[in-house]
Length: 189
Image (cartoon, rainbow, N blue to C red; front, side, top):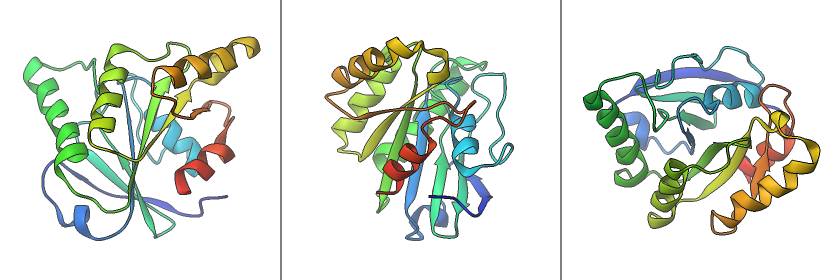
């Protein structure tokens, strides 16, 4: 599968018509600095569609990108560490929770991105609990797979899957594009 077009539409921080226009959402969530922007850029085949930053917590809106004129990729702010005040971090947390739990979007799938080298953190486990409590349709992507030794890959996948109630885990490398076809298939099925 190949994505032919991708364009930034808008960023939102509260109710907006884009949330309810019946276009399916594929929302990307992960800890700050897990490579969320890089994953989106890699799967759409564009280096700078989603702006990435070396400063964790830079995304402070819910950003919508129209993909092939039929689905939104929704880039949620990263959770966890952010170079911001406690008040700003709390606003980001509330924005994420609002999108994931308060808005009834039809046809929404969540792509939870974790660091393959680090594995599931306490914050990732909390996010899995939120997704499960809200019966979200989600998949788990272990980004930065290129940093794992070959013989550690299956062990990492099994460990993440075991701690996420048996979810299928997709190994991915935004840097090398490894796992792109499997991930695209999982996202759009």
